[in-house]
Figure (cartoon, helix red, strand yellow):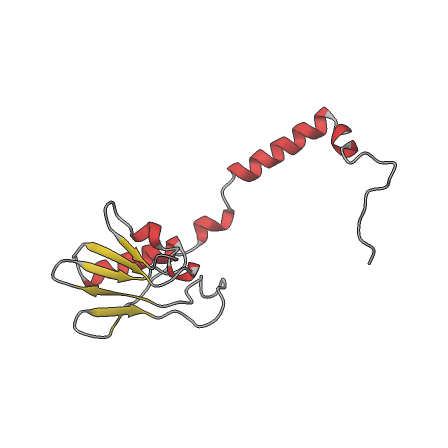
Length: 148
């Protein structure tokens, strides 16, 4: 396959300069529609329900499916957990999407009414911290390794 290159007698800006006002208006309208229109499937996606597994008197964890993120596992392919203390809840990792973080928050509320006091992030991989925005309330400190 031959690499693409602009013919020597063509100005690279030539295509842009030949765009008619009508074509430009249609393209602009299409772009605005794509930006403004919500995805049709977003409203049809059922909420994610997580079930924490008890591992000790105060410790719980969420076990994701091994493998790559997919539509089937909804990005739930890592593990996370929490500990209920007398002072509140300590969360360890927040899973890989805001929807999973929110499902984690809901599941924690089914176990305890204690507030989330601390969030510990194990490392920089997205499947361990993208759920932060759903779990972090004002003033909840996040602990992570300096290079994370």
